[in-house]
Length: 403
Image (cartoon, one colour):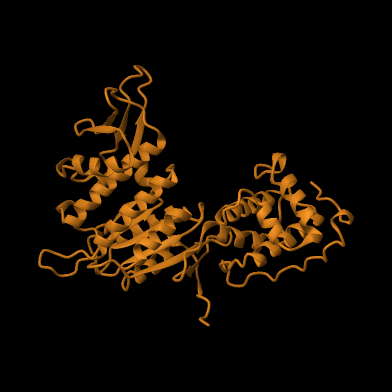
């Protein structure tokens, strides 16, 4: 039996960014999965800043990373034309080096090639005023949704990446590509399509050659909180393709155990962690620490609904009936219905009473054990499990869940 992957600890983002750069010395690509608010965006900026610090290898401090993250999206500002309510457009910030050479790159056709895969509107770029207007059929200067706006920005970024891979002079200092959460506000269908297209481009970046035919790869870091997107990327990058070189890559689960700024990194080379599995690990930590709120029932119910759906069943009754715990079954059902709705939702962080904490631990333990979830060890030494009290003799004799 293989040993469990080691969990590495990092005191701050700077040391973590250096770890990623070291890894890319022996791999083409790093895939990171992490929750929102873990620090993925700040990590991408620290990685970028590390590449432009002056050193013996880089005495001029020339930036070496082309990146996409929340800061990239902030370079585009929507203008609604409040005065005339007619000339609505997306304003670009020409002061950013992100747009270096944009006027000379002739990107309109390449952007349109990507955009036509995901959306049904057209665009026009005014390089004098640095703005983009949108149209659909005969309708001009239309307002597009936030999701459509993000799709357009992503397509523009992908077009720039193509020019970088083609060897355009404006981006020749870039040796790394860092992409963080490119699919905010997208539905699952577009998420899958974009993940497949992105994986194809990253394969091209990893196998890139210079004009002499010598290897000149662009090394890549990709991070996301979106479980579906992350897993599609892992599958697309991991599979072998005929007549294409294999992409050497590493997969990590990135976690911040508490708010003191320290981080943990665990390899997930065998199977990427699904979001609900990692969420179960978080619930396990909450249960063993004793800090449980009523919204934790809401989170557990959501995971059980996803599990039932995975097995082709319409609701959580499938999961409850599978637990083989007749003594607590009625209590579990009542608790999930009562404590995961209304005023007990996540917006009302009310701590559970002791009886409900015990009930939650029993339900969580039964669920994880019955469905044989292998939870990620997101802390080096997780606290020992608190003993759950013995189940009541029968549902009717046990106390009802208390708010």
